[in-house]
Figure 1: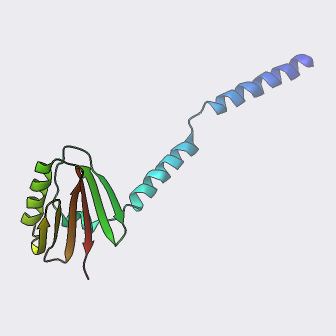
Figure 2: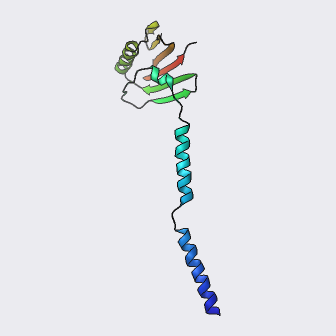
Figure 3: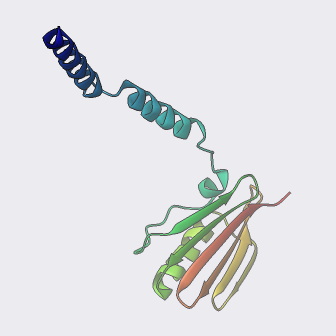
Length: 131
């Protein structure tokens, strides 16, 4: 009788061990749900599309305030800043243009307004839509 109880306990432990080592289906569902959530919550950033793409030497940081503004910050050389201002002008940011040392501001025909500053080698670009 004791042998049967011991054998039953061993079988139970074996089955428990097998079930613990099976693929984690719940984890897969969580991963899929998280990926789906990320895809669904991406916000279209029309401000970023209004300004020209530019390849900076350093990686920029970006902030998007939903429906209000877009801010890009990057460590940039004077030459990169000058090239980016020219790219902005080429992209149509020429209306109400103001340019000074370390500062540029302008609008385009679609109503987007950009302000660019270059302080201590940090380029900050602020984009918003004028009503």
